[in-house]
Amino acid sequence: MPHALIVEDDAHIRDLIVLHLGLEGLETTAVADGRDALERVSTTPYDLVLLDLMLPGVDGISICRALRRSGPNQDVPVLMLTARREESDKVLGLESGADDYLAKPFGIRELVARVRALLRRPRASQLSTTTPDPVNPAERPISVHGVEIDPARRRVRVRGEEVELTAQEFRLLHLLASHPGIVFSREALLSRVWPDHTFVTPRSVDTLVKRLRRRVELTPADPKLVMTIWGSGYKFADV
Image 1: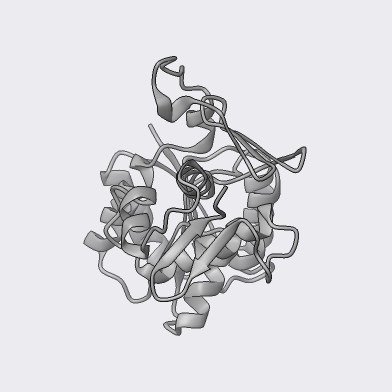
Image 2: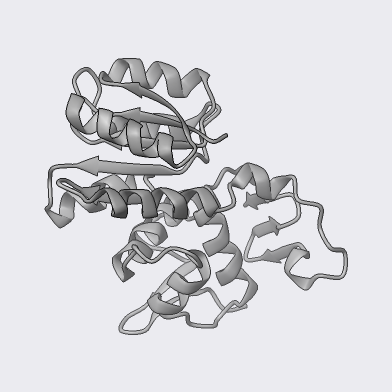
C-alpha cells in the first residue's frame, strides 16, 4: 500500500485529501506544521508527498529543497499545493524540486489523477535496481564531454565527480547525451521525459533544464553541455 505524506495547514482541505486518497487505497499521514513535516521527511520514507506552499514553521519550498538534498525521500514524487496562482510561484515550486503543481481551489478528480500519474512514474531508486538487458543499447554506458552515464546503475559522473540526479533529471540528461548535437523540441522532451503525464507544460521543460544545469555545468548561466537552441529547443553539445 503506497504511503503518502500530506502537509497542509487547512484542516478542511487536509481531511478531504486524506479521505479521497484513502479511497484510492493509499495509506496517509497528515501534518499541519512545516517543522513536523521536515522531521518526518528526513527520517521516514514515503511514496508520495503532497506539500502546501505556505505553512507555519517552515514553508513548503524549504521542505522540498531539504528532502531533495538528502535523506530517504530524495526521489519521492512531490505534488505542490498552493493558493497562489502566479506563474512565478509555480516556477519556484518546480525549481525547488517539486514534480507537479496544483493551485487551490482544485477539483478532487484532478488531484486524484495527478496522484495516480506521479505514482506510476518509476523512481530513481527503482531504476537503479532494475536488471539491465545486456543487449539493450539503451542500457549501455555513455561517455561524452566529461559526462559518464551508466543507465543500468543509474549513475552519473561529471568531470570525475559523482552527481546525484532526480529521476526526471536523469532521463533528460540520458536522452540528450545519447544524441549529442541533435536538437529536441520542448514537445519532444515532454513526451520522452514525462511519458505518462498530461499536466505538464513546455515551461516544465525549461525548469527541468535549469535544475539539470545546476548539477552538471561548471557555470550554469553559461552552459557548455546542455545547450539552448533558441526557437527550437535543447541539445547536448556536439562531439
